[in-house]
Structures are given as structure tokens and as C-alpha cells.
Length: 348
Image 1 (cartoon, rainbow, N blue to C red):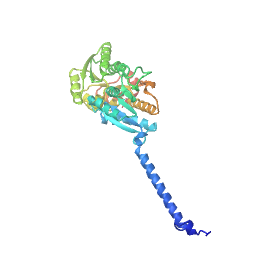
Image 2 (tube, one colour):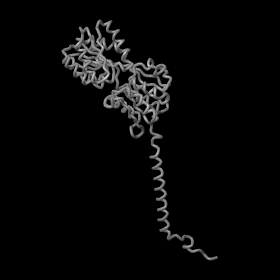
Image 3 (cartoon, one colour):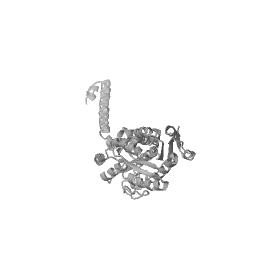
Image 4 (cartoon, helix red, strand yellow):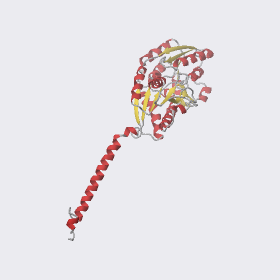
């Protein structure tokens, strides 16, 4: 038998050449595998990254100022970063509540993992649009009365969240205003009749007014351009002070309201500390930033598998009285010591 030589066993080149060739083959295979895995990784990000739908009755500018900072910050604290491991789909009504049903339908068509609804009209639109997608609400005054949930302890459906007590606070706001300003006989009331929570609050104010022996002059506001005429009408009725029923339209135009009430020497009771920071005389209510942070916690729980029906609705337990002494001085008012002693924050 003829002995095989090296060229018969390895006919493709020298050992060095074979080693180099095998290295090239290995690099080619690894390169191809990397390309395949890269394409697979980029082909399905939406399957693993949750989508959060945001539906709000506010304007986008107002939300960017008050809602999104505490909400997004709390989500970040919980481990979520927009564009990395969570995607936001935002829909803001921009003072056109009639668009909320169509905006809600748009969000539902995207099949988000969770929808967060800010405000009563937005929550109603979201509830109508879907009975299966989890919905977390915030800034809703009476979720049981509005049939959003069966009860606060057992929501029972696809909605849960953070309730905002407003009707129960109406009488207290009026009492604090009358005590702070003193010797007033008439109080003007700015309110938005489009909000389901507003009418009950005005009714509550009417009952408190009788007890406090003051007369109310309610003035409706449906659009931003109606704010100034409503306040001037209140001043013309010789009201000694003004009270704002909570509503996004008044938050959106808070600076205009403050400027006008200052010019007309009309002390104002607001619902949010942000209004007082802008120059309103005083406010009494829940901490909105804390409420939005709690809403983020609900989103986190649902994304981790919790069911809205099993998450009790939270209510605020701390209410803040904030007073702006600079505004009081400009209006020529001396706030009674007993009111100042109760204040959680005094702006000087």
C-alpha cells in the first residue's frame, strides 16, 4: 500500500494556511450570528416594552408643568425610563373635552398595557372605550358615585386609582375664606359646569353659605376667554371674595386669574398650592404632586401583574392650607392669627 503523503491528507494548503482559513470561517460564522441576533433583538422591542397610555382633560403644557414631573419621577424611582423600558402614548384634550372619546379610542386601538386617566371626563372616556385594559385614574372626586368602581375597597372592574375629595372640602374652603377675609357678605364662585364634580360642590357651597350667613354669586366658565368676564361680573356684584371650584381650566389660566383679582382687589380661595405660589391668596386641598406619585405606584403594580379589581382606591389623608402673605399685604388684609397658626405653608 502506498503511503499517503501530506498533500494527500490536506490538499487545501499548508497548516498555517488552513489555520488562517479556519479563523476566517469562524469569524464569518460569528459575524453572521451576531447580525441575526441583532436583527432579532431589534425586531420585537414592542413585545417586551410595556406601553402606557396617558389620557388627560388638561392641556399638554399644563400636564408638562404639574402632572408629568412627579408622575414620571416616581416611575423612574420604580425602575422605569421612558424610551428604554417603557413607552408613553400621550393624548391631551387641550381644553376640548369633547375630543376625549376619540382620543380614548385612539389609545385603545394601540392596545396599551395600562391607561392612566387624569380627571373625571378623561376617566369616563377611557372607561367607555375599554372594559378590559387596566385603567388608573387620578383627580377624580367621586369614583363610586360616578360608577367608575363598585366601592373604594373593592373596585370590581378594570379601573382603580386615587380619588380626590372635592365636595367634602367645599364647605371648609368657604369657611376658611370667610374667616380669613372677615366681614364679607357675598362670595363669587367660579365653576365649570362641564365637570360632573362641579355641580355637587356648588350645592355643598350653597349649604355652607347659609350656615356662614354669606351670599353666593356663581359664575360659569366653559372656555378660557370666559374667565375675565366672569371675574369682572363677580366684582360688579360687589363680592368681597372669590372662590374657585377645582377644574383644569382654572389651573390653566391661574396667572390670568391672579392678575385680575389683584387689580380688582378681590381675595381668592384656590384649590391648589400651585395657585398660591402664583399669587392667589390661599388654598386648601390635597397635595396634587403626591397624588400623581401614588398613581405611578398603581401603574407599577399593574405592570407587575396586579389586577385593578384587587387594588383599593386611595383617598388623600393630608390636606394643606397654604397662605400667601405677600398677596394679603397687597390686598390690605390682615390674616387672623388663628388661620395663620393652622397653615401648613406661609409664603412671605
